Length: 392
Ligand code: ATP
Ligand code: MG
Image (cartoon, rainbow, N blue to C red; front, side, top):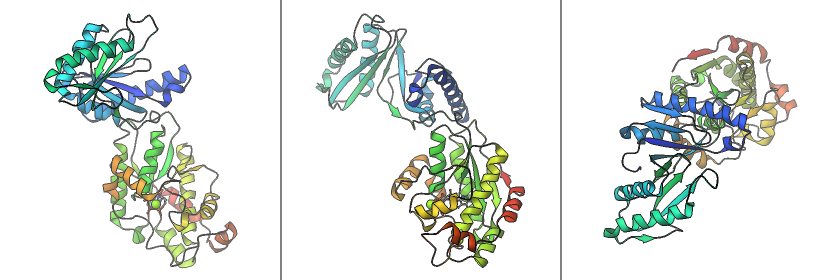
């Protein structure tokens, strides 16, 4: 929703704002580059203007809604508003508010909310003056609807953000993902199974500024072609949030390891399989110069994810294994997967159903796992040599 003729998108960020000014400036620059890439990827003609603490996008009025959607899919953005830009005078703001109300107000209660930025002398009026004056103008213009002012819980809000050089008028603050601009952290290798959890976990890491390199383990005879296809779809969905970062899916072989473990290991089989995956991932992290691993595991979600078992699987690697979903319930994860668009890629439970033993261990010790485990090292070495890249 936007006032008539809107050709600008106001961009707000959160966590960047608490950084030192040098870090903030660098991160703003990264954010601008990411916004530019997001617009480009969606074929939207728009120009990013870097303005300290309030970047903005200039675009054609007919593209302003799509540009706002692109902005609110960009990590680091807390909210965005398609808006009209006017002179920071009472008269111009009043006029723009009335125009916005004519387009959007159709009865019920309303409020004008104003914010002023700049020093105390930047304007000859206060934000309360803008709210009172603007509100009165809207009220007069809306007489046909029997208008009512409600400052606490209005049906319609008309916003003004008044800065020293210009004022923005808008009717919506569309929420973005928040977090930090992608590319402000060192990358992680994301174990992406094509299931429901792992794309959400990767997305959470990306939200905090971390590019991810998706790594899929192909269980071959134990998995099936559709599993790879789902992992590719998940990677594609995530890639749309990272248009200026490489996102090709890497596929590591895991059929031989699965086969060996199915034949030789009983109750602790899945733990050894996970140790195999983490060990291969560790080698891959080192090859890439990445900073760690991210998985979609959640405490207690499966037998391999009890607190005792996570301790045993983690001990195979010195790298940090990040688990953004550690404390999440499945229903919350599913809702988020729907929001970010990865749910459709993953409606069948992925993974290891054909590999799992009938009675998996839930409370393993490292000694027991190691005692039952064949030597994984040659399998890991072989897998690292055979990792393939599937371009999206
Ligand atoms: P998901 O967790 O993605 O929904 P899942 O629940 O079937 O899939 P789990 O057995 O819970 O998978 O595996 C836990 C985590 O291990 C996954 O979130 C993912 O990070 C990783 N993982 C599992 N299987 C694979 C695989 N085939 N390739 C890459 N990573 C995998
Ligand atoms: Mg899972």
